[in-house]
Length: 371
Image (tube, rainbow, N blue to C red; front, side):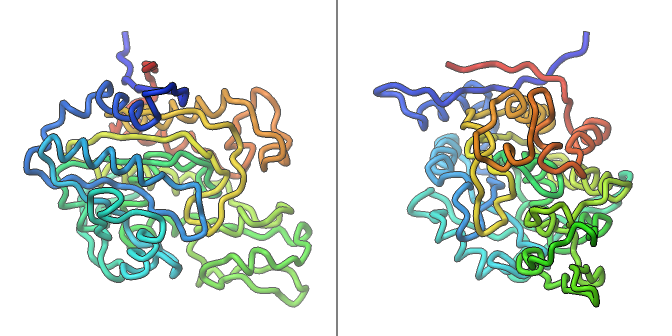
């Protein structure tokens, strides 16, 4: 009989004398974090600090509890993420650190310092040989590559280019240096369907690379020499004009993310946490967050990142939608996959299937509920 990976889960019910942070501590303990040898080791807590203006990211309170647990067990924790591919508020280490501080991630609030994994301008990386289908040598941020233990702390949400953003996205795309992100995005470029374009200019406004402009017909047109395939035009267009191409390139993006996650975690002790709260339809890279698509669900943890992502996706798909959210606008019907409904030109399943195929984990899981 095939063994299943264990995914530990707790809902958000509390009572007097036992708050959510206490339940979070219990979740980590039951999921086995105390079995890890942390003593005198460098512990990278891989997370997303949130774009300034976005309020859906992980609260610093949960980070502080994670740091406290690791320090109690003798580790040397630090918070880390790589710079963005586009030149925004987190495109270099100076601005990135400022964004982290503004959003509450500093030593006073969390008990750990922030170290930007790929340095000042995104060039500090190490090449990790993996020799997989798409990636031969992954370009990983040095501070992640040099860690002894990887702890990922993820806000589970929708994503315009991959369907959802979970642990594999946090570790894989987030762990890639600027060169690594370019390698992942290079085969996934959106397109504009002219007859759907209403000339509103929203995609032009939100494109971080200024790669979109009006053509001679006053329709949006993408300059593919500038486009980095980030998908923000897809998420900002309310008329279906900006679309991903669900073809080999879209599949390749998801598979590359899995391969980069494999590179980040290769040979390292690892543990993964996912907070299924404020499940916004878009990535935390946006400077805003739309209304959540489902009610807050809970918190989950596992040693297996593939099983954790699968469990979180299943929990969201089983949840009711929130009236008035983007999910409602998409006319989602019971039984349909929510993320594929949000972004019909994406298929998150490709990432998990490839991750399982390369030995990163398994999709079969046992959900163990902690009360």
